Image 1 (cartoon, each protein chain N blue to C red):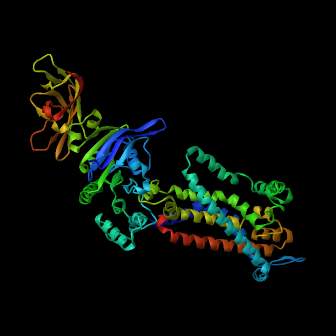
Image 2: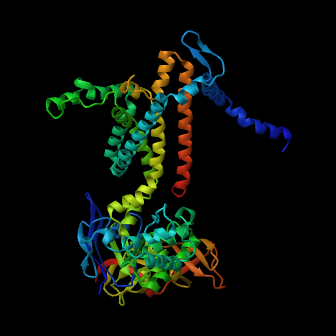
Length: 291
Length: 346
């Protein structure tokens, strides 16, 4: 092959991906880099943003226990949400997979339902049911005499977890369902014929094979929950902040952009590390099932 | 005495009858094949024996005990599935050990039996391989070892060789037969491959549309097919329309210009069925013209246009001169080489 042709073929992939690459760099990498840079800038009530390089914001995040508590809360909510979706979603997917044609499509729609409704409307729905003395469920339970005070839901971590789990469930169910599709349709019969009871079949045969699905679902749910904004903003408000709502408030209320940028950057870096790390771990652990 | 007995077993899905009036007695140590095209109910019958499906009517008995009353997990049957259904997250040894574990066999005995089972199927040294790192043939062997290690009362094979290539399939057939002979496990094989059924089984159950067409040894079903379906399904065959003339004495069976003394007890129009390798070229008989001749190494295959319709003839490549394309020939066969169906009883 001539050198000119070689050069041409070496350049072709770059030329072909250039438009997408430019968009990617323009709308993602540059703003991201600017956000990271912003986190090193100074800010004052009266002087605004000063483009200097200082570690003030990062030092504040590292030393003020307020931020540690808030990040810990963010990840605690994400972890509990992930566990909840896994514990409910995996059996849900298994049952869904065993349903026959028509029921399967109906229930798939039910499961996908939360994704079809605006996050604001859906979360406000939870607020209408459980919000203080006027919440529908609280009113009913109190008038029935079952409870004396409204169930604490708004401005609680429990409320946030429940509302987040509700919207994250489809990701878990679909992920586990995809893993179930890969199962040999005769595998349960094979185990049955060898003398395994229903519990053993689930525990020894089905679970290990859908575990990769559960774990990849968990990664999606965890990262989406940890960076969720709308649900924590409505349920938690200003009283119960998470990383995303804190960054928002720093940007738009305090107007301390550099501090908000530092919070956002830290959240991003932590999430990337957790996701990449656990993904590598899962792929090594379940190499045989993935093949 | 029958070891495994199916007594007028039937299965219906809604209004659709998948298996109808299936009766069969399998002797201990016997190798029986269910042979038929897809959708003939052979797999459904197997699944009823395995317990994955319940028969709509009829009874299945093993050593005179009602098998249908026993939970599938307690039946103690060994099953090899078409897809093998190995547990992909377990090694070959763990797959084979699973059934023993369920039977609470002690660890030391378990290891020993797993090792022996894998050695029997020619997989010694593959204990720690995962199924997805094995070839199709190896996976098949693991599946067989897994089914046999529990010392099943009956071994059920559901099209076990259909996913293998032709050469490997032949090897596995021989091996399967040897293993079955050695350990003497009563075996039922479901297959749509007539060669497989013929080379492996003691008896063949030919099925079509949920019904048994014929039960017999491979030779019986091939030489004396009980129905047009059986003769067509088991190898190639020629069906000629013929008539039996009882007005003459002695009575004659005539297919075109071929004739023979009529068999006893039949009259009117009948169908004569002759295997292509039983037809020879002679001076008398059915007149025909060779359309094509195909050389296949050890034999020649002739497609002819005869006075009774198309015919195929297979001749050994014995060095004799064979007719060429376009040549007019006479087709003849011995009366004992044909089977006669239909006709009225005389």
